[in-house]
Image (tube, rainbow, N blue to C red; front, side):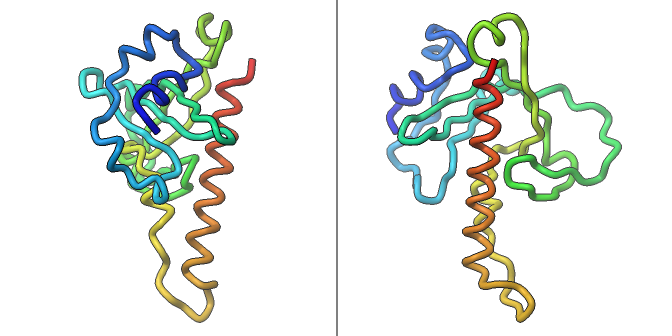
Length: 161
């Protein structure tokens, strides 16, 4: 995926905003076979984040804003995408404006995500071999499929009006 592919994929911001986004360097070196989406934070605005995935064969990008962290009451939280339970400071609420007029009118959708946007790495951690668990490779493939399905659902919610 090229920089121009990424910039033109954003569905919940203007074209001008999309072309001002700081796209991460080294796109040509990314291992897309081990990545279900590309997620990154804006180095100049740490509360802003971006997520680019695929809808069929087309890239689709979402602009996110990390909500201000409230006083953490829970010790652990779970990411909505990879469903990995983690210490509460490793999971954050991210909010995305909906696409189109709804987003321009302030309508948003929020979800809890890994603070580092590194779900692809979490789902690829194989469980230890055990007599009572299925083959670790099957577990990893199931977790990857679940992540992709939940990511597709989130993208659909951002795109619905």
